[in-house]
Length: 231
Image 1 (tube, rainbow, N blue to C red):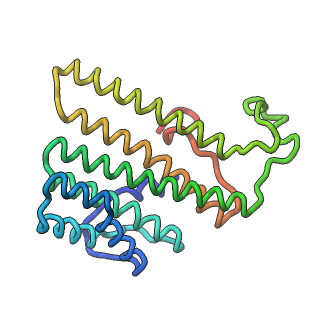
Image 2 (image 1 turned 90 degrees about the horizontal axis):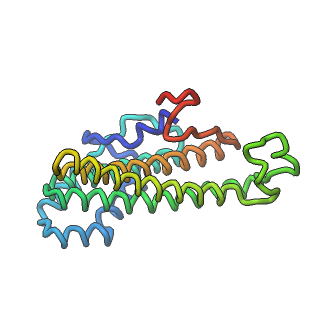
């Protein structure tokens, strides 16, 4: 998993990996949600072009092994680049929050995309649970044979996401209260919300990649923690 955590780091050196990626970039630049954001915050054409040029030069400091990874690296890097540069151009707290919300929405779209791809690959390889497979696993004996475990896992993650976001709001309020204010905390809370979504996308893509290359997946530890609790 560690290698995929680096996917979200953005740099601004010149490099584009493939024509398909460039087409995807243009789709980002011309997206309806982005144009709406430009209009709402009255972003000039010059600043729009500046952001596009910055993200056109986004560099990938890693070596993708296959087409799927190449596309994924481009998609995530471009979103991060737009979020970073939008925040810098908009400047205000509300503008930075808007850029983070834009990033959240774009990552959510990617999450849905790779969940569907992973699900399709699981079905394609006919990965089903054999009768009695859970008999020696006391922690999961409640799972019924034939149950859609991926769907159940996704539902559990959605509950976890909602709980995490509720905690983040409460934590934000507490920190704000203790420190007597501070607009920076709303930005940090939005960053935490976005980071949680990134982590799930990262997890789903790594599984999808393992399925198409190895036909199996590894165990994903909660919040990147090891069995002994260390990060």
